[in-house]
Length: 330
Image 1 (cartoon, rainbow, N blue to C red):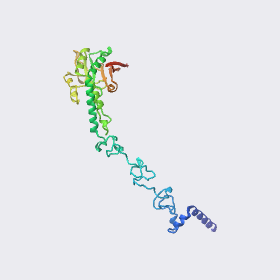
Image 2: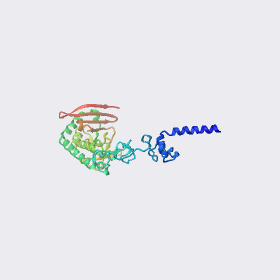
Image 3: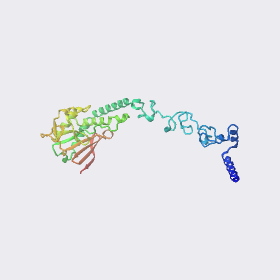
Image 4: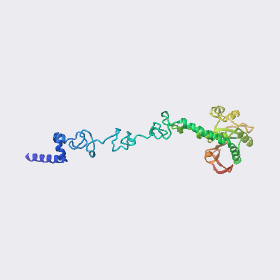
């Protein structure tokens, strides 16, 4: 029994020696506190009480058991805070979010971070944005109205190059609205509500498909021309639909006769003594102005059954020249 007691004393002595790594600090502590307290770890930061400069606050050993300071009180210690004197969230490394446009709405929640805006529009200012778009559209319309002759010569270029198979039949569908406005990406940004692209293309459609154009084309080819909507010239236009279209320059079409055929109702310009039928075998034409503003290019797209014929023209030296032909026959 005596042997076990001596062994216990030896182990206790050894452990005490291991625990007390700084005898000087330990003696200071013992002058005030009991040995039990001095060897305790009240704040659970793995530092003994006698070594812990902040024994009641959990802190790392590298800072002697004290928590690192947080000068701006944002909950991020200065050692990890990229902006220790300015309060900011952890996701921005302790820095306040910038406000690039100075509108009082921080960039992280500002849908238009470089344009001063208002909170109601999440930092955007759509009034100014759309005013600039109106000015751009007005300038675009003036420029192209002044160049209206280009559209007359374009019609001649397109219709003088139509292959004979596409001229078969008594009717032709023509798209007068190639790119109808469909907004499937609406969000808080002003640009998502922009109609400028659509408005420009619609204006070019209207310059091309003037009343004069319908008359001259229909009479020259003895064809009924059926106005349609869409890039594939499929959807016919009734008078009710025509009246519903805002900012419409096609009101002259209200004078066109209207028929119902194959459960479809639509208007047409009579170029043939026989009334048209809405027949999918008829040639369809869409004049695509997608690259007109940037490259002075226009593509005439003809569809016949499943066959496609694309003819691209470019305005070079005051005249339209055919620069590319693509034919896809199925």
